[in-house]
Image (tube, rainbow, N blue to C red; front, side, top):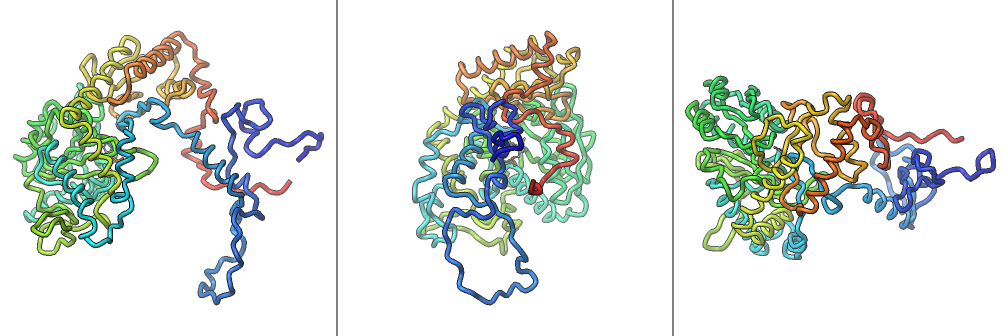
Amino acid sequence: MLNSQGRPTQPPGASTGETGTFTGNRALDMEEALIFETGRLDATGVDIDEPTPFRSRLGPHARQGEIGLPGLCEPEAMRHYVRLSRRNYSIDGGLYPLGSCTMKHNPRLNERMARLPGFADIHPLQPISTIQGALGLIDELATTLMTVTGMAAIAMSPKAGAHGELCGMMAIKAAIAARGEGAARTVVLVPESAHGTNPATAALVGFSVRPVPTGADGTVSAQAVRAVLGPDVAAIMLTNPNTCGLFEREIGAIAEAIHEAGGYFYCDGANFNAIMGKTRPGDLGVDAMHINLHKTFSTPHGGGGPGAGPVALSAALAPFAPVPSVVADGAGLRLVEHARGSPSFGRMTAFHGQMGMFVRALAFILSHGGDGLRQASEDAVLSANYIRVSLNDLMSSPYGERPCMHEVLFDDRWLKDTGLTTLDFAKAMIDEGYHPMTVYFPLVVHGAMLIEPTESESKASLDLFIMTLRDLALSALAGERERFEAAPRLAPRRRLDETRAARQPILRWTRPAPA
Ligand SMILES: Cc1ncc(COP(=O)(O)O)c(C=O)c1O
């Protein structure tokens, strides 16, 4: 196509590329328009015969006109999605320091195991006699999780951390109802530093949330818990290690206090990666705790893919666990599918959980062994502390020199005189080829920067990351504001107006009127 001056018109999407190239491409980094912009309404990638006429029963609901789906031939569709996939930052592409997410390497052995036909190709409705191996794996994983947590039972079916929270809190609600205290105990205590899923879960289950203040040292004290405890409290939801990356030192006393008051102790175990093999939550007085298999045992995390959040339960809560569960009897392994006649709160998923995640998690556990799991925790903590001490002469830590667990938290006090913000610093990391750390979370710390390197980074990789952050920090402190305020300069898209994007989101593409 030529424009009015006879020059070729740029392809769709290229005008926003800011590259100075005709295509908008940046060498092999390809610009990519929306599929609606590149596709043609009159084209199709497949030849489908006209359907034989039939009598539609849709009546007034039948489609009234064309729906305008873009047509592309197969190579065009393929390239569109491959180019988009190259825009993803991934743990396979680089260090992914997203605090609270435990973005660790997923060993390929796990993938190989998960793809074995006996695990990958089975269907949840197959006769039990044909899936004895799969049930055996679920059972073995459950037993292993009971061993590492020191808890009496495991509910395997929850499909994510937050789903596990829901499962644990439903078990607590059922236990309280069974005691005849359902109407009296309506409050759940949640520390201010908690992950947002905790209060959301408590509210979803019908409890009201009473906050517990986080102390000046970033942890929750037993005294602060006692101050808000009462006969109306059903449970506390406490994360350990907490979202500030700190071990809750008074966890034992907090458990005692909540039990004395007749409540249950829900522990958010999403950060189990820092303590597995070192501490057993069951020994700390925990009644229910989810484990994010996709974090601790390295199944892929993020992007909305399948997760798994099995919940470990104490003996007091075990009878209320959901169905289905795997049991062994003389005839082999079978599934208990119905809650009838038992105190179980029932079923929360259609089937038995995320089989692929179970296989990956057990492969991770068995290939590490007990000593390897312990070393993974130690290395995760070591990596975070290595980053902490390597940066703390430049960046400020909200809780001083105290060693952290698996993630290190900085605040924005060190940026005070630079006119720059945490967001500016994070955006400049993108130009350096890093996915930023978690920012502005936890909320209890001003301008929080939460870095979680995990155990899977080599020293060389950590050193490069540290040197990059030091270079950026020195640049910020030297007043080189343009490096930050203009960032990201080298990403496919420049910085968004995040306020406008949140307040006036454009969620739908509309076809421009013909020129
Ligand atoms: C402390 C904490 N709690 C709960 C969750 C929720 O887990 P999920 O994202 O699997 O629902 C996360 C997620 O990373 C977390 O870090």
